Amino acid sequence: MPKVTLLDRGRVRADQAYVVDGASMASAAEPNPEHERVEFVVWNAVVEAGGQTYLWDTGVPTDAADYWPAPLYGAFEAHDAAEHTLADDLATAGYSVDDVDAVVMSHLHLDHAGNLDAFAGTGTPVYVHRDELQYAFYSAHTNEGSIAYLASDFTGDYDWRVIKRHRHTLADGFQLLHLPGHTPGLLGAQVDTDAGTLLIAGDECYVDANYADGTPLGPGLLWSEVEWRESLETLRELERRHDADVLYGHDLDRFETLAARY
Image 1 (tube, one colour):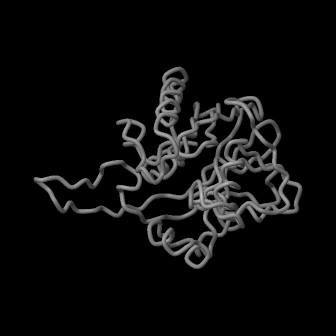
Image 2: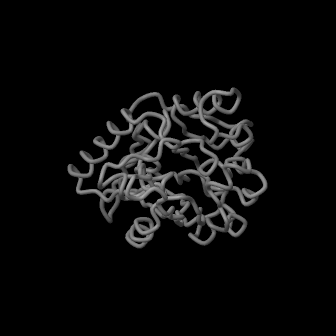
């Protein structure tokens, strides 16, 4: 059976309204609502399956404060990134960068692809959905798309393995799921382990309110609400069918609960 180990890659401070649509809406009764700035977790995962060791995402670069565009860092403050190198966080979990046989990129936003360069020129397979790779390059090299893609994160000598379908099995018990909405090519996963079935929702749902209440991400984090809601129902059906645990993209409480379980 596959084994999952979750890696704590640090924290990002951001306004709750980015993550939960309508969290700070003005009204006649409350013309100046208070804004809540919340600590969100950044995590990666190591999945051992089929004799291979897969790294799920690569996290935030240690120099995010200088490397990220100032408006993005101001909105999403990765304040402890310098304390979380990929090598050190892997070592804490008992792995090294050299142990990684393949990388799975859920998507190529700057807080998920920040250390992908550790695998440039190594021949390590990097799995990504076709729609994500196209949209990332389009966004990074034109004035269209999303500002959350930095060309330098994914422009280099990478052995891209492009996923084209809505389901892709990497190994027995480890299946990738196409969950468009946050981005066109967002990938999640179903991982069947001895501890139970883990559904990796990733940034389809940043926090529990997105999943449990069906409250979408803020408009700046949502490529398509129609696609997002369809992906949400896909996850809910899989949760019911497999009595699964659902791991969100940045929910600290859920991360800590599941990190202790898997």
